[in-house]
Length: 322
Image (cartoon, rainbow, N blue to C red):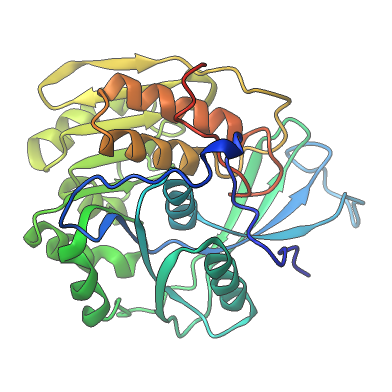
């Protein structure tokens, strides 16, 4: 069923920096605390999307990967040298065991509570151009929460908290605000309307979102978030169209970062956004300018598209040369 190596395949493009360590905030145990978002991606390679209707279609090997958004941000930041803590709800099932094994092999400081409905999964259809369609099974149980003991033991020791947008993670936001730590979140392919995302959009200090469904509403949405929320910036990640940063103090026009050419053939876009976010956060915690954070994120996202699977390798953002 699964393709999970006996060793951790998490690595940089340039292994000279594998053991490079950052200690951003003396007195803090973690540079980054990631809340939620580990699961299993089952990747199905297809000749083309949309898939033609047929009783049977022969494909290349179908493989499972430890993946999902929080996993990618945590492992990408860990590979960048950040001290990372990861908290999540996962199932007592084979998928949960895969996550535990991968995180242990990578040396990720991770703690988990039980998700009664099991571990989150996605089936991702990927075509020859690396484009994907994801079928997501969130396994939400109404009313489930991360145990307060886990959260309260970690929050005071983190400089930056990244909260994934599962419904159960909603209660983390006020606790993180009370702890006076910088909060970021990724709203993914939000349309700017769905109510599920608004708590995250308005309570985070830094917001990432895909540009896929925003369209002409992007500027108005940024203005709304700044008017009613806490965000200092809104980063719109838009694939081949690059990325845009809307700033609270300069809300009339975004800062733009062009898409950067991948360092190889595009194979699979799974995990590109998470790689962008992880590299951006690592750059921010080094004190780099926002434009540099965007450029480093763009490089990391482009590199992710040249590797099969999800979160299997990360570009080293600290290489001096482009």
